Every structure is written in structure tokens, then in C-alpha cells.
Amino acid sequence: MSINDKILKPSPDALEKAANSIRSGKLVSFATETVYGLGADATNGEAVAGIFEAKGRPSFNPLIVHVPDLNAAQKLVYFSPFATKLAEKFWPGPISFVLPRKDDCPVSELASAGLPTLAIRVPSNEAARAFLQAAARPVAAPSANLSGKISPTTAQHVADGLGDKVAYILDGGDCAVGLESTVISVQDDRVTLLRPGGISKEELEAVVGTVEVAKADSEISSPGMLLSHYAPGCPVRLNATDKKEGEAFLAFGDGFDRISDLNLSETGDLKEAAAKLFAAFHKLDAQHSSQIAVAPIPQEGIGAAINDRLKRAAAPRN
Ligand code: AMP
Ligand code: MG
Image (cartoon, rainbow, N blue to C red; front, side):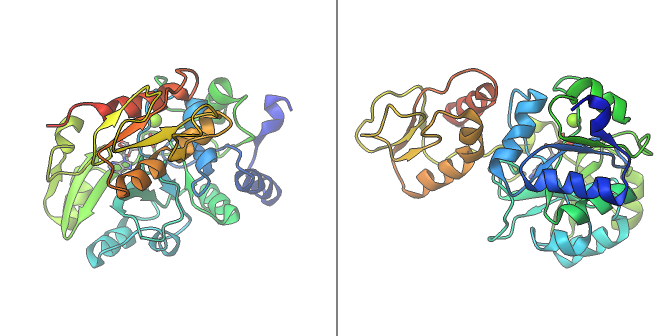
């Protein structure tokens, strides 16, 4: 299919095609009022891994999950009465809320990068909401640009950067806001600004009073603050080819059958491994092993992002 055939104006027919593609695990770029998003079915781990692969992101950071309305959001995360009030005030619109995942939240752990929270947003762009309604499932979507490039604000920008990686691009014209959504976390009645964006700090403060500003990422991850990275509770040993006393062994590929406790991908599929990584850590963590030994992961394609995360997990803790 030529790239021009992939760019669709959001007619009902086009929305249905795009929604079907999302449901079958493909990537669809769609216009929102902030920037063009690179969307995947958030409940499908391999589809979410496809986002990181397509963007060439060197690391897994948590993604924003998009839903058509507050009701859909409330099925995924816990809204305190205060968070509900804020959502009613600012949604639909260019602001994402980081809230605790519900126990039965169907969103892939990769979309949360293993964190117990999920960033969620209801966009105001009409076509985006119609698309999310048609998709009938949460859609994980970072900006639709290659890693390191600037965010796209027209369908052509997306076509130039990621045209061969998406099934469709829903062309909603130029983005009205043109910069990313504001990201806030809401804990009790405290609001912390994690990323400035389409809704200003002043607009927020007019509604909530004081807004704290999160310090640089490294400080957010310090104890007591928002964890920006998940790591297992026990030490992690990398590039392991044997299993020591007391260890749990996390395999990749078919060479470790005798010692494997869990396999990221028996067929050696890196996308499958990315999709399973955080869930695997949580599972092995719960077994209270003294250490998790991880088989070597090839440093190619999305393997680089897997190894980045493994290295962080294995780094000495304070
Ligand atoms: P992007 O999807 O590229 O627009 O970026 C999403 C932004 O939201 C990044 O700055 C993330 O660090 C932030 N974010 C997403 N989920 C979480 C979360 N669970 N906790 C903290 N920050 C988050
Ligand atoms: Mg981006």
C-alpha cells in the first residue's frame, strides 16, 4: 500500500478501518489536539512493544493511554473524588493523569513500564475520540515520531518519519495545541506537575490551589517520591548462562530449558520478550528468590531497550 493510501480523512468508514487495525495489533497514527499519536491496543503487550520498536526508542518509558471518556478511564485506574473533579473540569483536553492501576486493569504492564500507576488521557479532538470509541479498547500512544526527532503536528510529518511502520494515519489536519499534554499525578488532594504541556500550571492552580512541580527525573525516583522506574525487589544478574543456588532463571530462546523458571520468548522473539518483561519481573519477584538471573538478550532492534531496562534493574541500589 502506498503511503498516500494510508492517510485517511476520518470518515466513519476510515475510523472503522483504523479501529479494526488497532484491534488486530497493528499501529495507527491519529491526530489529537496536542500532537499526532502512534497508537496501539494498550491491552496487547506485543502491540505496545511495536510502538517502542517503530520509534526506535532506546528505553522503555511509560506511555499515555487514551480513552474516549471519563467512564472508560474509571475502568482502568482509581480516581479519588478530587481526581474525578479535576478530570470533569479538564477533560476532554490536553492533560494526562497518572493514577493507580486497578487490580484488574487490562492494560499491558509494558505501557506502565512496570509501575503500579498508569498515565491516562481523554483527548478533545473529535476525530480522536470517535476513533477511540470505535477501537473500543484503551489505546497507548506516545508522539508519532522516531526517537530523538520532534513531535509531528501534521499527517505528512508522520508519513515522513513512520509511514512504513503504521497501518493508517488518521488525518485530522494541523494539531490545535501543537505541544504535548501536561502530565500530572494526583495523590489525595495533592497535584504534582510531572511534565508541562497544553494546560498551564496557572490554569491548574486556578482550580486546585497549589501545584507542586516534580524535580528532575532522578529525584522523582528517590524514596517517598513518585517511582519513575520499576525494578525487582531482589538483585538481578545479567548475561547469565547458568543458575546459581537460590536464583530464579529468566530465559530467552530455547537454550535454557533445564534451568528456566520463566521464558521471555521460547522462539527468541524480541517483541514478545519486551511485552513480557515487566510481568516476568513481577512474577519472579513474588517467588522471593535471592536473585534473578537473566539470559543474554541480543542487542538488536527492541533488544536494546530491553537491555537498557535490564541494566537499570541490575544496577547497585542506594
Ligand atoms: P509521551 O507518551 O511520549 O507523551 O510521554 C509520556 C510522559 O508521561 C512521559 O513524560 C512519562 O514519563 C510520563 N508518564 C507516563 N506514565 C507515567 C507514570 N505511570 N508515572 C510517571 N510518569 C508517567
Ligand atoms: Mg514524544
